[in-house]
Amino acid sequence: MDAIVAEDLRKRYKTVQALDGVSFEVREGEVFGLLGPNGAGKSTTVRTLATLTQPDSGRALVAGEDVVRHPNRVRSLIGYVAQDSGVDWEATGRENLLLQGRIHGMAGAPLRKRVDELFELVGLRDAADRVARGYSGGMKRRLDIALGLVHRPRVLFLDEPTTGLDPEARAAMWVEVERLAEQESLTILLTTHYLEEADRLAERVAIVSQGTVVVEGKPDELKANLRGELVTVELGDEDGRIEDAAALVRTLDGASEVTVDGRHVRARVPNGAQAIPSILSALDGRGFPVASVTTARPSLDDVYLHYTGRDFATEDAGGG
Amino acid sequence: MQLLRQTGWMIVRQLRNLMREPIWIALMIIQPLIWLLLYGQLFSRVGALRGGASSYIEFLTPGIVCMNAFFGGSWSGMAMISDLNRHVIDRFLAAPASRFAIVLSQVVRAGITAVIQALILLLLGLALGVRVHGGVAGWFVVFAAAALLAMTFAGFSHGIALLVRKEASMIAAANFVGLPLMFISAILIPPRQMPHWIEVLSRFNPVNWGVHAARNAIVAGGHWGASSMYLGLLVAATACTSLFATWCFRAYQRSI
Image 1 (cartoon, rainbow over the protein chains, first blue to last red):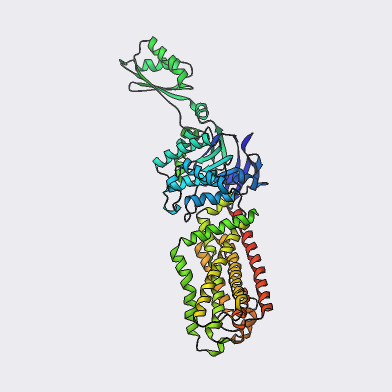
Image 2: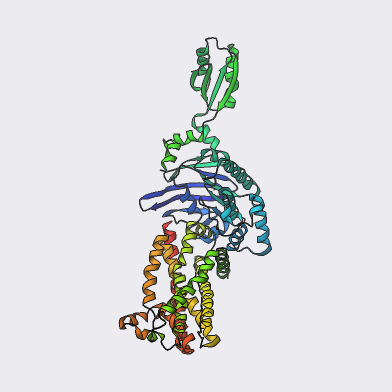
């Protein structure tokens, strides 16, 4: 069964069409990434799935429950970690978690035990009884995640989990999310405008742009479908024959966009691991000495550019 | 049951957070005392203002209890704005928290604060020679009047907070409503001394319902029937404004 089904979700705020027909499915137990620049509609999508925002039209099921018709059933099955921290600053970490558990109908020893377990899980054990006002940004973020997990939800929404964190805290958060996906056997939907984050964490991603999903798939597949990999062969001693080497590579099956740069020959191939042996044996057969071979995959940057026709970094900076 | 449990835990949260604000506690205690001493002195020589009480301070004490309660209630929506800004409300709403429990907990918290302040004011009043002629029942009527007034205005204040969601607008709204209601009331002077049209208006002022109930309990030590009616009106008013605030949640949610 799919943990999340979004079907043609639409939402308009006065002059802005925030969602313009968003559709995707997330399988149970999967880490799924919604990737897109700021303002693409990721947060509105998550808020809709978390029952905070009512869609104008379309349908969404989370853990099998309709978010519009049975919002309270959805709420007890999900954990929602918003982009902006929802921590109560004047309460201690423990008080925050206990209240959240009580809102979910938990009580007594099981709740206290779960809270201890969560402080352990997110690494806040020593800060549990301090007032959250004194927490660092990273600590508040981890408390937010614990707040989303207290009732053992089946689906966890992480809206921009690492925005505003320094690189060190971000790396720690990535490890955290990977561990959660394993230990808590959760379906996780995360949104991000960091390409590397989606690449690292998500088993599948949907690229969102201007309120719709432009493409969906495994990051590796999206990149493979795109233009294959870039293979760079460095010749040890080309002896003025570099153009001949390039010409030879051009004749090989699947190689395209072959270029020469100093002692380097570059070519696009659908799959580097499969192409390299044939490239090497062809060069070797003609007596070209090969010094090194490297492959580079296209990034999600390239995927974004390909499907939207716009450059990710520019779009993101523009906030459009 | 779930509603009451959630309301209870949310009240615990708010009171505990307030207890961590020493300045808030100090002001909560000192401010009503200043009102009582200041106004008590200002009008002490005007005999016509006593309205049958043995001293102006005795006449004034129930008025200040009520003024304090309804001001406290009017401003209590600031807590909702702070929770909205800190995204605590969104976190509650994405969990199965009852909207009514969120509102009710804030309303009850305002009522509890008002009762504590009423107790402080009454104790100071006793020190200044005020007698609660209604006895133990009188004390309870004063506390009930204070709690209900605070709760009535807290419901209203939280509704406004959910609609405007900005501190500046909230301050403007509280002043716009609060100050006229204070002057169209018998807080400072007996109805007999008011211009007729103000006296007529004041009968529809919820603040006045509280003032009459509390003053009956302290000064007259009787008129329990009238006091019960006023308290009943305030219960109805509290219900109305709490429902109004809960309804405002829908307006808030439509806008996000």
